Length: 441
Image 1 (cartoon, rainbow, N blue to C red):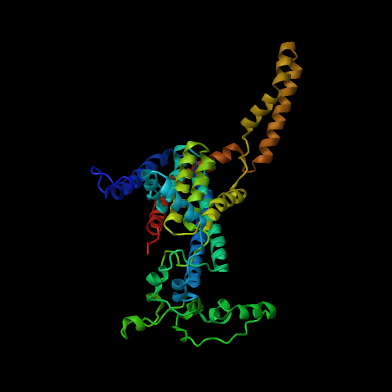
Image 2 (cartoon, rainbow, N blue to C red; image 1 turned 30 degrees about the vertical axis):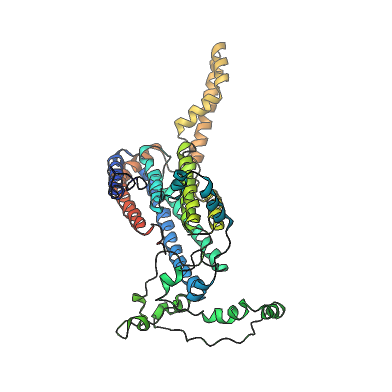
């Protein structure tokens, strides 16, 4: 609808933005109406601690990533980003050449923003809440825990990757537009000592390789500004704040942490690999595991469309997108063993039915022969086997004790479930507000 709205006379551009909250509201109402009939709140409750632990882990890793994004952007100074050309990208060349060969409507479709980051989050929410309608096995909160945990792991791998080697931006003007008034234009003292003298001097670089020491004299750059951030003082070296009075006059607050806003969008050097695409691909992996058919194929199609659009719009290099596309399934399959759980032990009645079915041929033959002693012996063996299986698999007490506990638990599991649904909707709506596409510069 976002693609169609604004491109036709009968559908206004604001229709999609008005339709989206309505769809969220319908989903919330349907979930609340279906919740009283849901029979697996006990499993959801047992999965809740893992979900909240995974959610906190994800938020913490995103916070660490934000700091490292700021560091790799400002460590070389704003001028380096403006003066350094982008890397050659054959994926960009391929897409540009296809523009000359494909029909104009297809090219327009490939360039269109069919889905955004919040759309993939909404797709996962639909999948997780479908447990209420018995579309996927419970617990739905367990699936959410695995999703958050895998995203957190992907963020760890991501900031370790892009912090290891700093790549020039796909958009050279980005750093000056985003950080020009808040970050120094000259390199960090670490870069002044270990990078700048050897970046363009081949003779000095050969000597560094031979001696394995940084020996070249440093250029005199302006001193680093060091405000008092108290317990957060260690972040000054990483975030490199500028004295606000340089750009905003003497009345400005001089380097207060509260006035130093860390932007929620990415930095201006290339951040390998793409965080948008790996999150979208993890959503597709979850759908593929639940519905390995045309539904998951459609989600994967949207992922590939977003991937090529990231390269077209110069948000990432092609290698960032390729890395994200094969890392997501790898991470999703790798973390499966952490969240897989053994099937629940059979009840005594189920175990007895299974044991009798295994002795069906013996019982049939004994009944035909009229051998009651053989029938009695087979039934007694089945009862002993069923008793052993149910006793070994379930140590929670008798069926009567379990029924009493379930009755007591059900008194507060329904309020817990409804409360969890509301909490999850608040969390997701908050995520939607910060998960839009990056600004274009």
